[in-house]
Image (cartoon, rainbow, N blue to C red; front, side, top):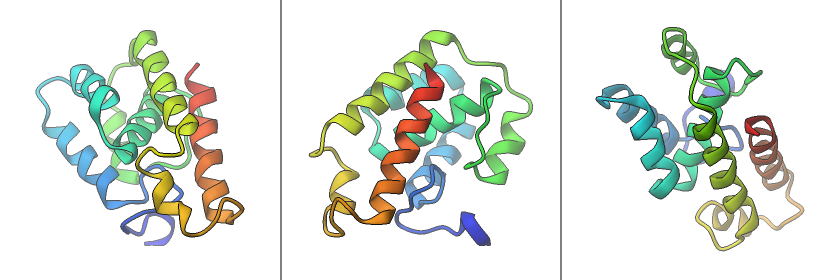
Length: 132
């Protein structure tokens, strides 16, 4: 399965069970944009990051860290509203800025210099920057 092997957590946007579960829920949602908006407002860290990565993909920006099923689904979708991308950028920035937010604690035991923690933060910063 390579880089998309499912696990409890991963440095990649769709490399964890929660992000893939979120994508499954998205596919069943009656409307895509309101579902993503709700995720950005009150979703888990993993689902917010997955939403940001998905919005990048739908915006035609380079996003290599996406599960093949997500890429297939995105092929038939419209580009997202710019305001939604900006909201996602803000939601991801809030995750980056708050060391108490869910997600940081997963990595806390490894230490702030751990290469996976650094990679996770770098992925968030990359997505956040591309969404703006």
